[in-house]
Length: 179
Image (cartoon, rainbow, N blue to C red; front, side, top):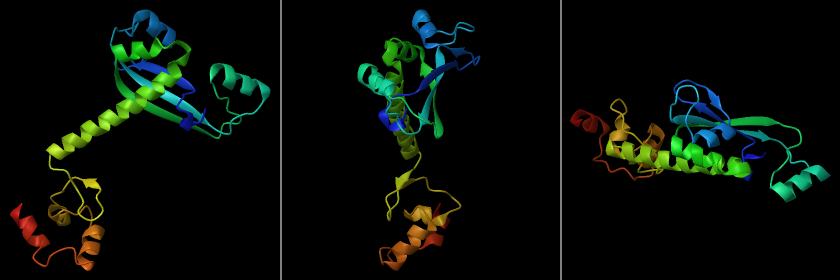
């Protein structure tokens, strides 16, 4: 299944504490709890097989009836892991029936966006900022003086200096001494 179709070829749930793999059908029955240890957090692994989409009659029927793409020869396999999936979310994905692969993919995308926003906010709280030259988000480092005047790298600081964007009063050594 091509990754851009947003449907995983395989979805696996592994218990975070004991590592036991749980089938989706079992998750539905148990409402998301682990059979072995009873833990309520899961590691969800989505597997995508990349390759050309098959155009055989059976593949076209599968696409039309079940909205499932059949990949011809697999050229690459991609594994995407989402850790710490709570009990309620795992059970909800499992309840989607035969469309759980699409639901798992949407959940993974949503979690990645939320986790990235949360991490970015945490970095902002610890002093992260955007580069004055290129706009990339970075964390200032004590051993890199150009970061204290608002630049992510020596290259950005140098190009801003050549372009006249850095005022002559900006001295890297004084910004490090002040820290």
